[in-house]
Image (tube, rainbow, N blue to C red):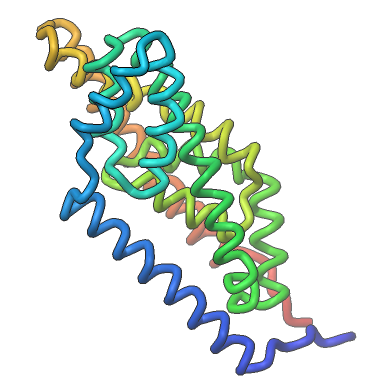
Length: 235
């Protein structure tokens, strides 16, 4: 039996350093945009509104880029609702969400995929590839249902593990529908308060959170079972 070719320690160290630098850059970006708020979202909204009939398309592009820069998605979705109302705003939010996923996934793939594969080793990397083929799309969908996780950061991670862009786009579109409505509707109610609309948004958010928690629990159980019951590779 032919033994798998090992990865030199120097290559592993270089891959680890590259990944650490990528993570440090994303952490700094997160601090600047989500904590320090160096980007004035209100100014962005005013700029988009000034484009007139092109405002929805402009907001899709701008929001996708800002989302990839780790500006919090709920703020961007609320801005869409405030500018365009709950119906058109939800469509705009979904378009921006798909764009954000593709930008972040592509960047994560270019910046971290080779390093991740080097650290995993050939056998584990091929195992991850098989898992992505079987369930990469639904992993993206499931992540979108889990509250409290940055979609952009998750997209960077999915890209680093090699999830194809079409799975990123389709998964983001399917999985983001409930939350896109929730945050866009809440943003719309800021401009013109509607108690039924706000109540519906909160109800959808609660249902989405429960589904997300259940999905995480189910996924962890399946993962533990596969590690416990999986066939041994050593013959």
